[in-house]
Image (cartoon, rainbow, N blue to C red; front, side, top):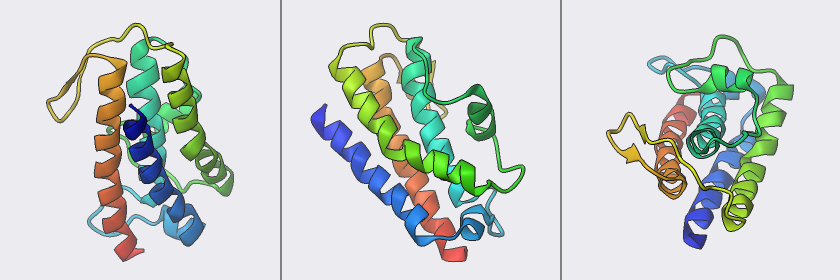
Amino acid sequence: MQDTFEVARTGRRMLNSYFENYTLEQLNKIPEGFSNNLFWNIAHIVVTQQLLVYKLSGLPMVISDELVEKYRKGTKPEQDAAQEEVDFIKSLVFSTVDKLESDYNNGIFVNYHEYPTSTGFILKSAVGAIEFNNFHEGLHLGVLMSIRKFV
Protein backbone atom coordinates (compact mmCIF):
# COMPACT_ATOMS: atom_id res chain seq x y z
CA MET A 1 0.00 0.00 0.00
CA GLN A 2 2.97 2.33 0.40
CA ASP A 3 3.04 2.90 -3.37
CA THR A 4 -0.69 3.67 -3.33
CA PHE A 5 -0.15 6.44 -0.78
CA GLU A 6 2.81 7.80 -2.73
CA VAL A 7 0.69 7.91 -5.89
CA ALA A 8 -1.91 9.86 -3.90
CA ARG A 9 0.71 12.33 -2.68
CA THR A 10 2.05 12.79 -6.20
CA GLY A 11 -1.42 13.71 -7.42
CA ARG A 12 -1.98 15.97 -4.44
CA ARG A 13 1.29 17.83 -5.19
CA MET A 14 -0.13 18.48 -8.65
CA LEU A 15 -3.38 19.72 -7.08
CA ASN A 16 -1.51 21.99 -4.71
CA SER A 17 0.29 23.65 -7.64
CA TYR A 18 -3.05 25.12 -8.74
CA PHE A 19 -3.27 27.03 -5.46
CA GLU A 20 0.26 28.32 -6.04
CA ASN A 21 -0.11 29.27 -9.70
CA TYR A 22 -3.66 30.58 -10.13
CA THR A 23 -5.49 33.54 -8.64
CA LEU A 24 -8.75 33.25 -6.74
CA GLU A 25 -10.51 34.63 -9.82
CA GLN A 26 -8.91 31.97 -12.04
CA LEU A 27 -9.72 29.19 -9.57
CA ASN A 28 -13.39 30.26 -9.67
CA LYS A 29 -13.74 30.81 -13.43
CA ILE A 30 -15.96 28.33 -15.26
CA PRO A 31 -14.82 28.30 -18.88
CA GLU A 32 -17.33 27.99 -21.68
CA GLY A 33 -18.14 24.34 -22.30
CA PHE A 34 -17.38 23.28 -18.71
CA SER A 35 -19.82 22.86 -15.82
CA ASN A 36 -17.32 23.55 -13.05
CA ASN A 37 -14.02 25.25 -12.29
CA LEU A 38 -10.54 24.50 -11.00
CA PHE A 39 -11.51 24.99 -7.37
CA TRP A 40 -14.64 22.82 -7.56
CA ASN A 41 -12.56 19.93 -8.93
CA ILE A 42 -10.02 20.21 -6.13
CA ALA A 43 -12.68 20.45 -3.42
CA HIS A 44 -14.55 17.56 -5.05
CA ILE A 45 -11.41 15.42 -4.87
CA VAL A 46 -11.02 16.11 -1.15
CA VAL A 47 -14.71 15.45 -0.45
CA THR A 48 -14.84 12.27 -2.50
CA GLN A 49 -11.85 10.73 -0.74
CA GLN A 50 -13.59 11.28 2.58
CA LEU A 51 -16.87 9.83 1.34
CA LEU A 52 -15.43 6.78 -0.40
CA VAL A 53 -13.05 5.75 2.33
CA TYR A 54 -14.35 7.07 5.66
CA LYS A 55 -18.11 7.45 5.30
CA LEU A 56 -18.53 4.10 3.54
CA SER A 57 -16.41 2.54 6.32
CA GLY A 58 -18.80 4.00 8.90
CA LEU A 59 -16.10 6.30 10.27
CA PRO A 60 -16.16 10.06 10.90
CA MET A 61 -14.96 12.36 8.13
CA VAL A 62 -12.75 15.40 8.73
CA ILE A 63 -15.07 17.52 6.58
CA SER A 64 -18.53 18.88 7.28
CA ASP A 65 -21.77 17.69 5.74
CA GLU A 66 -22.12 21.21 4.31
CA LEU A 67 -18.87 20.76 2.36
CA VAL A 68 -20.07 17.36 1.15
CA GLU A 69 -23.30 18.91 -0.12
CA LYS A 70 -21.40 21.60 -2.05
CA TYR A 71 -18.81 19.37 -3.71
CA ARG A 72 -20.16 15.82 -3.93
CA LYS A 73 -20.82 14.07 -7.23
CA GLY A 74 -23.55 15.77 -9.22
CA THR A 75 -22.98 19.29 -7.87
CA LYS A 76 -21.61 22.36 -9.58
CA PRO A 77 -20.48 25.75 -8.30
CA GLU A 78 -23.43 27.86 -7.20
CA GLN A 79 -21.24 30.83 -6.27
CA ASP A 80 -17.58 31.76 -6.22
CA ALA A 81 -15.53 30.30 -3.39
CA ALA A 82 -14.11 32.86 -0.96
CA GLN A 83 -10.41 32.90 -0.12
CA GLU A 84 -11.14 31.42 3.31
CA GLU A 85 -12.76 28.35 1.76
CA VAL A 86 -9.91 27.99 -0.70
CA ASP A 87 -7.42 28.16 2.17
CA PHE A 88 -9.38 25.54 4.10
CA ILE A 89 -9.45 23.09 1.19
CA LYS A 90 -5.75 23.78 0.58
CA SER A 91 -5.08 22.79 4.20
CA LEU A 92 -6.78 19.45 3.54
CA VAL A 93 -4.92 18.52 0.35
CA PHE A 94 -2.04 16.80 2.15
CA SER A 95 -3.44 16.38 5.65
CA THR A 96 -6.21 14.06 4.45
CA VAL A 97 -3.71 11.76 2.73
CA ASP A 98 -1.44 11.75 5.79
CA LYS A 99 -4.39 10.91 8.04
CA LEU A 100 -5.58 8.22 5.67
CA GLU A 101 -2.20 6.52 5.65
CA SER A 102 -1.94 6.72 9.43
CA ASP A 103 -5.47 5.39 9.89
CA TYR A 104 -4.81 2.57 7.44
CA ASN A 105 -1.58 1.63 9.24
CA ASN A 106 -3.47 1.69 12.56
CA GLY A 107 -6.03 -0.76 11.19
CA ILE A 108 -9.14 1.34 11.75
CA PHE A 109 -10.81 0.29 8.49
CA VAL A 110 -12.72 -2.81 9.56
CA ASN A 111 -16.20 -2.49 8.03
CA TYR A 112 -17.20 -1.27 4.58
CA HIS A 113 -20.56 -0.61 2.93
CA GLU A 114 -20.34 -1.88 -0.66
CA TYR A 115 -20.75 0.91 -3.20
CA PRO A 116 -21.17 0.78 -7.00
CA THR A 117 -19.26 3.68 -8.56
CA SER A 118 -20.50 5.57 -11.59
CA THR A 119 -17.74 3.87 -13.62
CA GLY A 120 -19.35 0.48 -12.94
CA PHE A 121 -16.66 -0.65 -10.50
CA ILE A 122 -18.03 -1.91 -7.20
CA LEU A 123 -16.11 -0.90 -4.09
CA LYS A 124 -16.10 -3.72 -1.56
CA SER A 125 -13.45 -2.63 0.95
CA ALA A 126 -11.60 0.39 2.24
CA VAL A 127 -8.46 -0.82 0.43
CA GLY A 128 -10.41 -0.98 -2.83
CA ALA A 129 -11.78 2.50 -2.13
CA ILE A 130 -8.30 3.91 -1.46
CA GLU A 131 -7.00 2.43 -4.71
CA PHE A 132 -10.08 3.52 -6.69
CA ASN A 133 -9.78 7.00 -5.22
CA ASN A 134 -6.38 7.42 -6.90
CA PHE A 135 -8.05 6.62 -10.23
CA HIS A 136 -10.83 9.11 -9.47
CA GLU A 137 -8.32 11.82 -8.58
CA GLY A 138 -6.43 11.14 -11.82
CA LEU A 139 -9.62 11.69 -13.82
CA HIS A 140 -10.16 15.05 -12.16
CA LEU A 141 -6.51 16.05 -12.60
CA GLY A 142 -7.12 15.55 -16.31
CA VAL A 143 -10.13 17.87 -16.11
CA LEU A 144 -8.02 20.44 -14.24
CA MET A 145 -5.39 20.28 -16.98
CA SER A 146 -8.11 20.98 -19.56
CA ILE A 147 -9.71 23.85 -17.62
CA ARG A 148 -6.39 25.60 -16.93
CA LYS A 149 -5.97 26.30 -20.64
CA PHE A 150 -9.04 28.53 -20.57
CA VAL A 151 -8.62 30.56 -17.38
